[in-house]
Length: 224
Image (cartoon, rainbow, N blue to C red; front, side, top):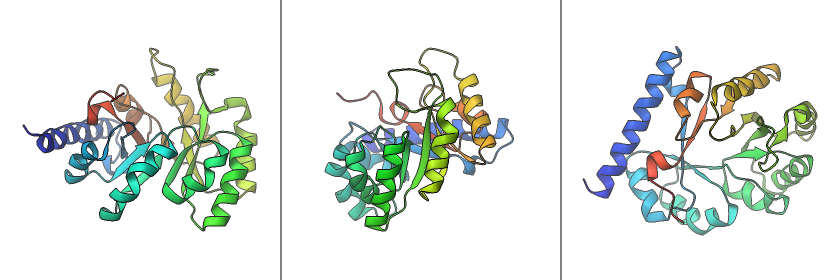
């Protein structure tokens, strides 16, 4: 198979696995949004997936996204771009201008910066509050105990918060962490859950994920 065929085959396989997991959980597969994580991948690696029909992509860094996505979006205007990596407050305006959703809102200073950026630009990308559900010091995310206060600040700033995001600890069964995130979302009246990556997205879908972030299963191993 050539590169275009390989991309289409990988996309179809991931879509089939999402659909199977959703149906097992008595969910509509259409309620799960597949985000193709294109971080570190150049435009020529992204195009085959776009040609295969994928229209939602995720990036980790604002600067990297700025280098490749404006040109791609000029041609493929229906592409949706999500920021899934940590965001510095001084990059808030750039992020709001470029992205359609921001998955890593995790502190009051960023809430304030995003609120100002949205007022300045007139754009209001969907926001997910990132929760550090594994209480891991090396990871971003709001501590679970601080989640109510951060949500209150986001609501007071009129941030368009639509759901919660989390990355469970590596090499541990992820199901309890996904279940915890789903419970937290229910408690706070949020119905969108950004959780699940290439190694665990089926479990995430079973437990209510509305957005899964898939990189290597679609692109192959990450380029360095």
